[in-house]
Image (cartoon, helix red, strand yellow):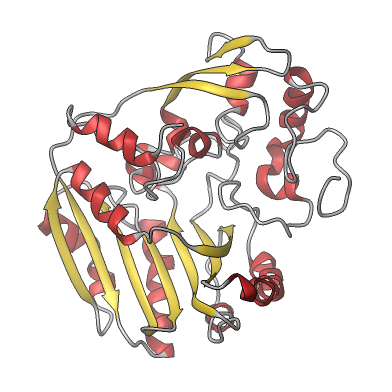
Amino acid sequence: GVSNRELYHFLKQYGYPFSSGTCPTVNAVGLTQGGGWGHSSRMYGLACDSLVEAELIDASGRLITASEASHPDLFWALRGGGGGNFGVVTSLSYRLTPVVSHVTYVDIEYSRIDDLTALRFFQTWQAWTTGGEIRFTPNSRIFNSARDGMGIFLRGFFYGTPDEAEAAVQPFLDIQGAQVSFRYVTFWEATEIDASIYPASETFRFAGRFAYADFSDSQIISLLSLIKTRARGASYASVALYAMGGKVRAVNPCETAFYYRNSDFIIGIETVWEDCLFEPENQAWMAARFPYLRSLTTGSYINFPYLCTDHYMDAYYGENKERLIEIKKRYDPCNLFRFPQSIRADHPPGLLPE
């Protein structure tokens, strides 16, 4: 039940960074089982790459300790196979990274942007993620807000000094209208800056996919056009970007259950609304736009689940799907642990299992 914020707070007293997620209230155990992207991923890998042991109660009530030496098949599956599929995880043990005293929190914003600025930012993002500094793992939003109009932000932790960070992100600073802040803070303080950005609560729909090849200018323009009009009742819509590469790519796609390690970035679309009366319109807005996103990308991120994903096990697990099905049958033969997008040996060809 430990959240990202609680995990980071515990490690604060020892000075350790940790490669977990950005949202303070997300459960670290569930995040790890889905792979676990965060602002340290290019530097230290995904959260699941730091996992060394897991304790789990299986369908028959047994307490199992899974590691490279004990139940290695289950240990493989717990690193990217998605939360809740194989049992109830009661404990995880992680390998810590070296102590780091300070990082640079990078915050770049562009306000009231035009179409050309959005296009140039996306072009820069694509070039940067394939050749940029691995000490920086940014995420970004190109957004359409009811309050602020069209804008962009890019944020993340840089493992180095502000001067080094500035050099690393210079291509983004060369885009007209860039407003930048570099804050040299402890790792804990950086996670708290991130936490302060998240609202206390939010009703939204999000779908995230993996990008492998550069999009053409016409494809970028079409992607950005998806958010030009918000759904009725929506306060916010965005194209979201999360950098991959670095240490994420250093692990073979089949070495853990997290398959899409060779992707350049995660790209998602999002709609946010406040009044529950507008949920149908926002769901329809997403359903109308998701097919185009899917047509340009490969596979979906299990930690950004979307119920309208066709053939969801193929989408979430790629070539690791069949091995995950065999492990599921071994540890949960009666399919006790099931939910709308759980791993199933009898998965039908349609959208959702019954």
